[in-house]
Length: 115
Image 1 (cartoon, rainbow, N blue to C red):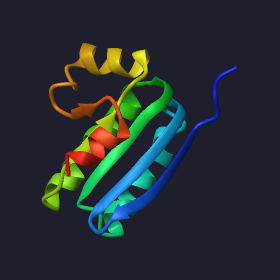
Image 2: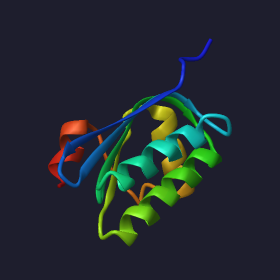
Image 3: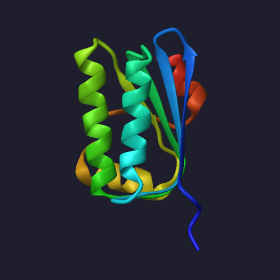
Image 4: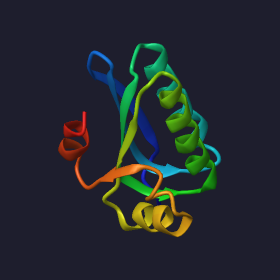
């Protein structure tokens, strides 16, 4: 049995948002991740950390949401940084070449320190 999907957003400080994600991010759950990213931007987060350290599976739909997220923050002059510790997430980012597109950090502290 897989871990239940969750995505929770928070403002870390003015202009910097955090989305903490856990479980499987796929065709069914990726829209909820998108909602959290869009909501943070609407709340004034130009910069964002998406913490995927508790994600056990990620599919192409989720990757599309993350690519859309980086495009959205770029339109407001910001950056999106990801935290990826799990092997499945690191592997799909490497296979797709997205590890070269996104700033990927090993820890949340490291990701937050980039801002």
